[in-house]
Image 1 (cartoon, rainbow, N blue to C red):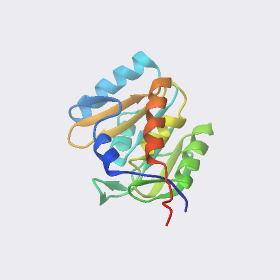
Image 2: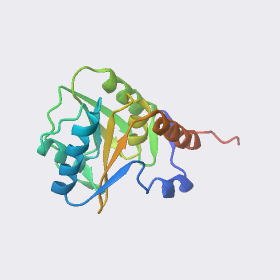
Image 3: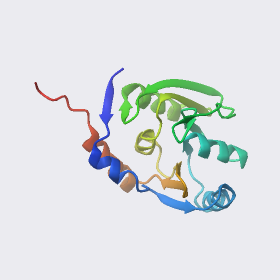
Amino acid sequence: MAIAYNLTSELRLRLKKPIGTLIRGSFDETMKTFKGMMEKEKPAVIISVGDTVSKNLVKNRVFPHLSIVDNRVMRKETRPIPITAEKTINVKNPRGTITEEAIAGIQEALKSSCSVKIVVDGEEDLLTLIAVFYAPENSFVVYGQPYEGVVVVKVTREKKAEVAGILEAMKNVRKAK
């Protein structure tokens, strides 16, 4: 399993802050606001990252083109969420990394004409960056912000450039011995 990117301690702090619009509130409040954003913006594609946010979108009749889950909530095992996707892709992605396998899975899912669920063996959080980087412009990437609400990233050329800078800082550079 080839690791493409590693999280650095500097970036860990930076990425604790939302990279999109934070919608604060309960699940019901955040979903109501999110649906309003969807009606106004008409996103090309909706991508959910995380078990809780994916489950809540489906519960509120919002069906993402791509859901990325790891069957964990707040790092604790949970029952697999009942998302009906036409295709499931399984990838390995250890905590604090982004693997080539996970990148390929997201690229494959975004090229697919059917709904896809990616089940991650490891951790899915950093895959938000890859989803933003490869999603078509005017897509929404939605993820949870623990104890606060949900974050909606509207994919724009500027947002892709911001994410490219973060990924460049994470590039897996082998240290010479």
